[in-house]
Image (cartoon, rainbow, N blue to C red):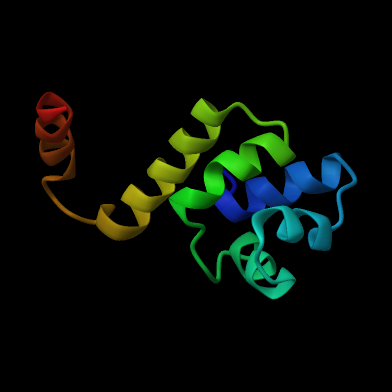
Length: 92
């Protein structure tokens, strides 16, 4: 599965949108978005709604991909991850 950044880049390219236009919609520098797409920098949750609109991706799908990557990158090697996630879901 593609990283979150690769997913964004692929979708942007499918739509024929230049990096600068998407970055402008996010009100960030193109170098920051480029780093997000190359998995060198993490997107923020504040970016998700704008990205959803600009890239015509359902917000639910985008949030799930974003959260999944965050969990895997920060906690993926922890022995009791599934147990912790189960308890976290119960707390919602």
